[in-house]
Image (cartoon, rainbow, N blue to C red; front, side):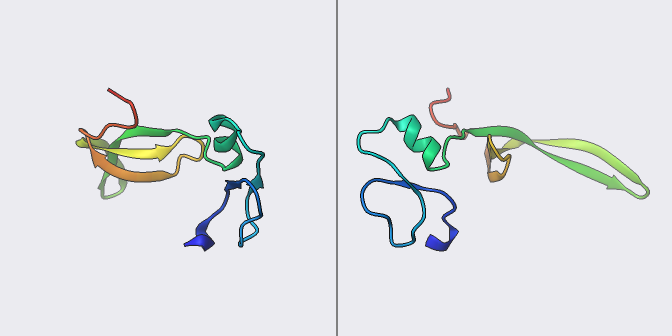
Length: 91
């Protein structure tokens, strides 16, 4: 799956794939996250869908037992999970 790597960071020798941003040793986590392209959060939103009627757009409905997880920077969806699923240290 190395061909799917878009961004990364490393210390020391350049990786075999030639990708990534080289960092010095002892960099803080924030620097690693930014240089590796991982300085985003996982966000959640309710699952919504549109009921279609002939000739009209239809109504927006919500599916209360599920939510969608997505990236904060690109809004790319990651997964559909149950309402019970907790993101990170969320309580």
